[in-house]
Image 1 (tube, rainbow, N blue to C red):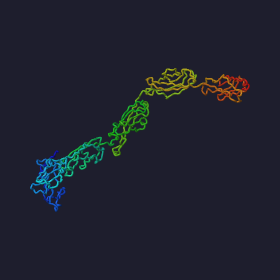
Image 2 (cartoon, rainbow, N blue to C red):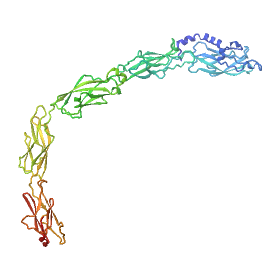
Image 3 (cartoon, rainbow, N blue to C red):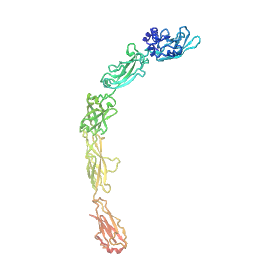
Image 4 (cartoon, helix red, strand yellow):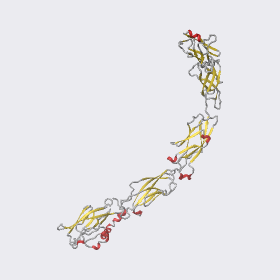
Length: 588
């Protein structure tokens, strides 16, 4: 083991020191005047004392507890102490025998005088005491003069171990802007020297590096902040060097050191900041609603949750057209359209945008509002837009049987751009089917190309295209629905005409014999009709014909029934197989 220079200096005085120790702490023979109170406190062990002097001769072991200095490096063996029995008259007849831990190797004894020496340098930190046994026998007879006795040799400490930090270096954190005296971390050094003897293991802590930001308690090793307003954004890491010194910190004490790496953790002490007071954004007028058209970012020097922010548009007119949301990952404000832009109506929009911290800390409210604002000037870009129709869809009508080239209606489209290009109209016909309508290329007037029949097709759907003259690729489409209006161009038709009606002879008076129906292809207004028997056919009182809302109830022999509507007639012939009933035909 390494021996400090201070110990080496002490060792040169060892013979004198040991001598004095032995004289003051050891007892020899029966001289009880050397048995001081201190010797009794050192637990001197007397196995055969004077208590029994009235029973047997007075004899026994006489010694104190022995001590030996560790790390002895002198040229001579280190004297430990002396064994002495009161049976020893000094004539050399007593032989002292030593056994136990280290006997014969570490500790040797003069068997005649009982003097014990340490033959090796000892290390208290390896072994602090040795348990040995002593016997005294007669040289001539080998008879035991004293019973075997146990005693202890303690290794006395010297300051040969410096304090250490076995778990270092260390890492610690403390919030930025902490108050002075905030506890950061506690270091604890260990010293292998004897804490019960002297100041060899009495440690005092001091700070070698890290001032004036931190301090350390000399007794407890607690590191505390020594400066307020330490800002993480300015400096976030400190390497603090702590020293532990034994001998209560006095000159000549041994020391060890360790590093404590202290990191300042973040608090929300910084507001968001826009890097510019105003920004400019170009957005084409055809940008789709609901899609992002731009991004803006405010910077926050804090981190994590303390840097989270939300964006908002503070002026109501801009907020009605634009919206802004926060991208949690990039912490950007995403600007989107709530309404379409129109270059011809408004070329510039100004947005007042505000960024504010989501989680402000009330402890730092004195630093000011945790938000910032800027203005964003949105330049609307002019885009060549297709023509715009006056309506989203058109519904028109025309009477059937109208001659070809009859005007049906007009569609109108204009170029919304500032150039105000002329517009031409076309009817879409990708499948190249026959067209019933045509449109004026310049006027937008829709006309028929042939006579239309409502009963054939009552509704027609076409698509009209409008294209700019200056840029034919700018095309718009609009649906046009054309209804063919009805005219009374169809006569009613009696169903079941020219069919025979069979009447049983036993048919009762008033019983319905047959229902006659008629149909008209025209609509409900032009398709109304009534039933009657023509005037040139004689009446038969035995049968009755009733018009029942377009239905005729007939009882007849052979007669003609006419379904009549103003200006049109149709005949039906019915034959009865029973000629006797013809006499009773009746009309109502």
